[in-house]
Image 1: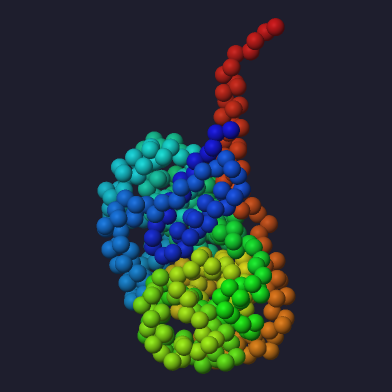
Image 2: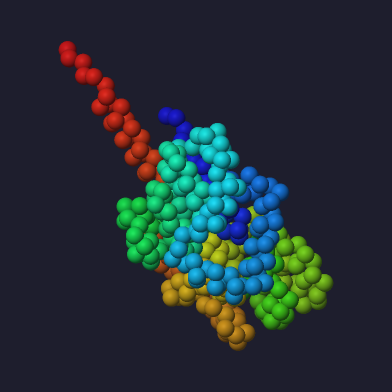
Length: 392
């Protein structure tokens, strides 16, 4: 059997899109030895000098002017990409993207960000004969995701499916699969061994995420992180700062964050293990982080959601009862007291969250495998129909 080549395209506007791409690649490789995957951040790959400037401008807008970002998001919510932006993408990516696809010769292209999906859709309208899947990596769908050249949308929830149906996407082109998470997040690790590995204690543990883009601005550090650190005698804190080494060094200079139960963690591939020993996650409501937390069964508290998709994600998980938006520091105190009072019973609560969130539908990897198998069968039947019958 010839191995199938799957090209997965993302963009660097936030970590979640590329995390989803790599998670899907891992799922596919694990599910079948006959699948070959390649993940590319298209902008960074084609324009390694320009891309960091573009991503930096986006980060500054999101973190320093979130209200402006929210206005732009809402104004374009039901619209596809405007013609000017489409022309820019065409000029920057069209010819070179076509050359890459011709060189790699994928059997299927999967996009986890709307920009590469728009580019590949344009190539398909110009004659590219490769199926295109789009994985929507949030719990809402913005208009830029939608394009008639997409063969299949893989979406997080039934409400997102309904949203696409309301916008005229045919039901046959939509499957509810959940957002792909790395297979590691489906594993159950030994808590005792994890604690030994990271030098942690068996006590109520809270994980804090969201610092990789410098999200912990000065006022948030003073109001949120300092308040959390005041609980360090009774609550173990795992503050994950990602690639933001500057923020980690700044926090280490303050006595409040040099306590035995406060752990400032830089970039790590072990988030799945750290989630296993955490009883509560305090995070910004990014689609990928929330999906990973739900796979681990951790209740969440959300701070400073960016207007737009993060607010939609926040609303979704609040409605399900899996998380709460932080409206005051008193809310944190309430949750921390609950952790201390109910610490031995938390494992059972986590198990119930996992069961509630388990999807009856197939995963992204299973949906892709089924599609490839079906196209193989159709190709075989088509070839057989052209073979002349031999009469004995």
